[in-house]
Length: 255
Image (cartoon, one colour):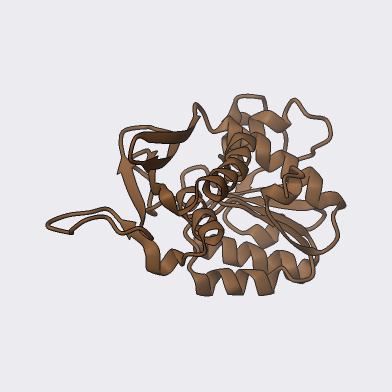
């Protein structure tokens, strides 16, 4: 994600990269980001310490792991720097800590920055509201073999949207996969299935089915550019926004 964001901002004069951060121990630490990305040396070296390169920035874009996101939220909150985070896998407790850390700054936290996915969030809400309890709901997500969390943050958000719209509980009514003699599907059940295959960037299918028909809403990401472009749109948004915790529905005016 970092490399794709760097590649896109290279052609966008509204952005100036002031720093780049990677995890401790990575081979890229100390490398010039321009040289690494094939655009020529630019004088910005990758560090493993966000605090060393955050001063002077208007916004930090975070695509890391939960611990990294919490660290970025704490640091940005203390320094009054806007934050865009696409990190997934936050537990409820971690999300609460994150929210408290960014209370005084503009922050976009979204499980998926893609414009298309965020349009699909709205369409899934509309489908659940119109089709109602007569339709079974199953969610399937496919990602590359290296993805750490399951289900994906995006799939969880689809499940939350369905549960909220139909008056159900994500924690109580989502069933992650099936095995053995599980019995007939219940009316409240929301099926959730995660596949990990090769180098798949991301694919999400939300199926609504009843006796006689099935409706499917599908999004396929062909590259990470869809996420990177959305993150840059969010960065522009938080640069002008009042302090608060936003998501991509706010950024895109879909709410």
